[in-house]
Image 1 (cartoon, helix red, strand yellow):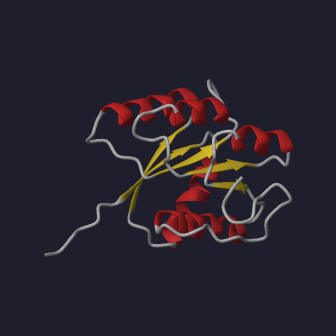
Image 2: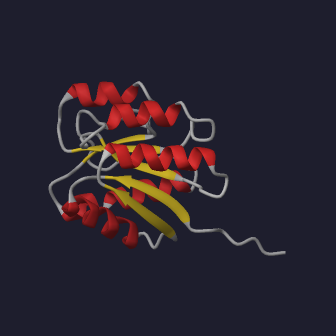
Image 3: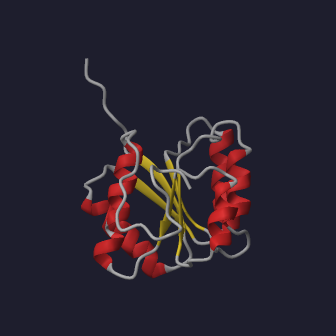
Length: 156
């Protein structure tokens, strides 16, 4: 008997078209069988999360979340995600371009799987694909040139 794995369903909440493109490259480089659903504001992200929570046919495997979005910011989205019936433990990679400690502290309340500071180079950004691959494979995300705000061992 063969078991076919459906593509991973990844929700990307990101308002920068450039960063969306970089995420697409990072995931493509890992040859990860996935469907990437992109939303550009917090209201859209919450709408998808609520729809997935109420519909057994809608599945989410991972949330890639920019902490600074229009309409609702990252901590409001995380609060809503963690209050759902089905997605309280959904893996989340929090992404931010700031080094502000308060961003990490705000995100930490909602137990993200990994805290990723957006790098300035494409080569460094590609490592996001490795992090996503590790998380979806059930492994601890690997570290790569962590900033002082990034964590060791996959906990924010």
